[in-house]
Image 1 (tube, one colour):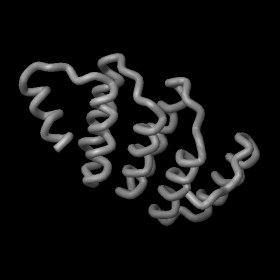
Image 2 (tube, rainbow, N blue to C red; image 1 turned 90 degrees about the vertical axis):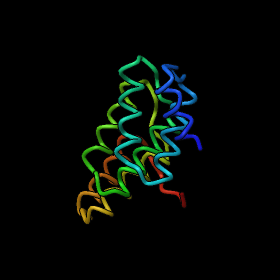
Image 3 (tube, one colour; image 1 turned 135 degrees about the vertical axis):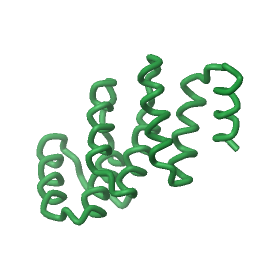
Image 4 (cartoon, rainbow, N blue to C red; image 1 turned 120 degrees about the horizontal axis):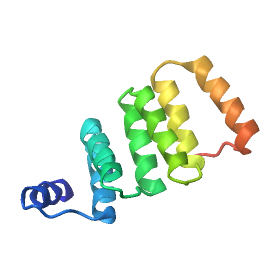
Length: 125
């Protein structure tokens, strides 16, 4: 439903706001439409809109599930450039992306680095 509304807005020439676009990212992510979620994210950045951490985390998690590790880390870098602080959801999504890509050694190395550099402590998320 949210995706249909977004498409209709674009076809009508209406520019959706930040909240609407973040909802669309979440909807595309939930529907496992990774490329569409990433496209909306890039469109937000191009329009000067600032995605919140929740939208970024949803996108990272979705990209990780799709095996798109490189793209997930690009979104992570955007988080930092947008002035957001990564949280446990961010770290868990990135660790999950390594796991799904069968990069276990890299996952352990990344885990050690975030524990050291960001005082990250694992949780059950």
